[in-house]
Image 1 (cartoon, rainbow, N blue to C red):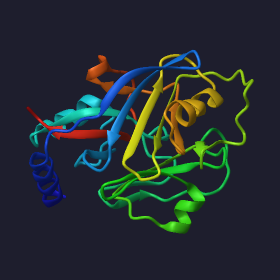
Image 2 (tube, one colour):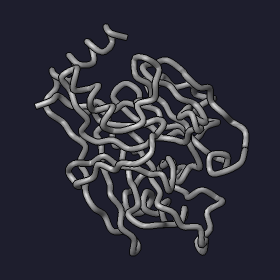
Image 3 (cartoon, helix red, strand yellow):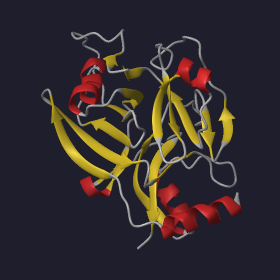
Image 4 (tube, rainbow, N blue to C red):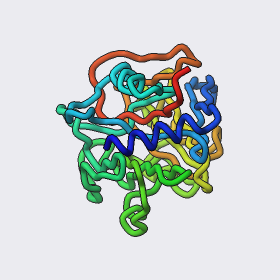
Length: 245
């Protein structure tokens, strides 16, 4: 693990400065915070446990760990559903090590509203992959987190989403381009339906695949937008690492 961190830090420091591009977006009458990452250039990864096996829980804890290694968070967001002990509900891979296996069966809640999917960070790319496709392809993911439901699948909204739904929550998710370079993270600034949120990724951001990460507990770290959301401890977190200046 120490050798891996030395390698990663050296790679980060050797690269030109890169950052997630965050902005406020309006779509179909709703407001969103959107952060776009070039997965081919930026150090995008997941965080869950520290070196002692304790959940980080908060953006500040992750940033403090990075600061000790000469790096810092550029952007971060909660990245998938978790149990009371912060353990991931579904598949979770960090630094190539699998901590929780993939769950393919339907179940209760949003996670089990099939089809669900996996956000996979690989070598110079990031992809949202529907769960059964993930199992079939077995892609090489340095980092992966499973969540659900899928928001957009091959350019189409999840078949269970209703245009006239009255279920509204603050929601966050991620979408990816077909070539794996664009990873776009979005969080609604107000309660929205799944249908509205899916349309943001499909129509507003022009992404063929998107995955719901969570709702209500959604949190964002984006200094560019003045966001450093605090609250109770989180489970998995996705973020961009950059050299400290």
